[in-house]
Figure (cartoon, rainbow, N blue to C red):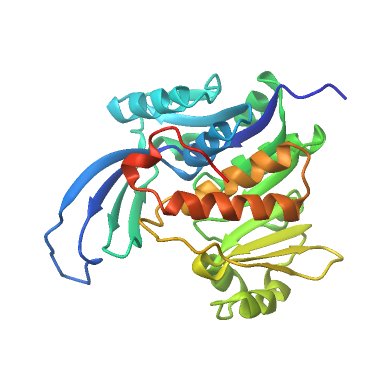
Length: 301
């Protein structure tokens, strides 16, 4: 089999995030004064691709942006961090994806996304892009793009022998066809709870939920924020990985950091447990940084 051109290919979303700092998240009908705002290049796909590239993986992005200023910023950010952008296409009818996120004083956040051009990705073209740019050892998918795109790319990746990671966020009912193509399913505690239909708050409840969300996946990781994470692989007992204790500045982007780090470590030939430990340490370091510091070169675990 021909050696793939890339370590990691991400097929997924690109959003420009409008970040607003506020004392707390607004309740229904509440207007509160914020303290500052700024723009951050994001989207789960873009964040995960940038993180993999920053950790040394040769990384490419398959995605779609609008023909607008937001799209220009998103494209420039990928190139800034060394992500290959040949397969990032421009849509001339839909605007670029964007989101508005409110960060509270504890570093927690709530967000609303408008997908825009991300929903215009074409399944067959994305699969063809995978082949055209030379494939990868690892592919990352998320639910911020249409499921038929995920299926086509996952099918193409499997034909070329790649490992496929699905970040099932935002949560939705994934088809059996897609799940049968996935090697590693990654969900946080909220997504695990919604998929399983049982409460998930800690490692014990996450392990209990595995029976309800296992389906056809070979492995599942449930991330639990300050409670650590659970790694399950078919045929093995679940493994609990303890949290890294840090002072949290902002949890925004933590999950994407985890997945980019996970893929990067897997691309080096490490096993899933070792990659999960590395990703856990990296995400903990990431949430301890200010948003300004995150945009500067820094050392990871």
